[in-house]
Image (cartoon, rainbow, N blue to C red; front, top):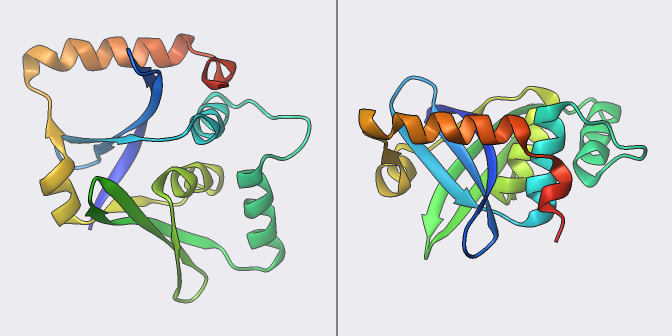
Length: 154
C-alpha cells in the first residue's frame, strides 16, 4: 500500500463530472477518481473548513464512529475493476468495511485517517505528470483555492 494525499476536487469539462485528485506522498504519481457531486461537495467543504449548520452524512458517520469508540484507522483503495474503484474502511481493531472511495476520502479527511492505495491500482490508474505539466497542477491548486463547495451542487 502507498499513502496518498488529497490534492482536491474539481469539475472536469465538458462533462461537468467532479473529480478528486490524489497524489502519492512518497512518489510522483497522481490518482484521479471521478466522483459524484455530493461527495465532491463533502470533500471540498472539509478541505475549506466549511461547517454546515447540520451534519452532512460523512459528519454523521464520523460522529457515530466516535460514539461507538470505533476509530477509522485508515482508508485503503484496494481494487479497480471495469473502471470502478473499490475501497475499504479499516475501523477499530481489524474491522474492514467496503465503501466507495469518494465517501471513504470524505470521511478520512474528517477524522485525519491516512488514505492508502494498492500498488496494483496505482500501476493501472496512476498517472505521472511530467515537469512541464506541473504548471497545470499548480493551476489546479489555484483553482481549488478559489472554488466554493456550492460550485459542485448539481
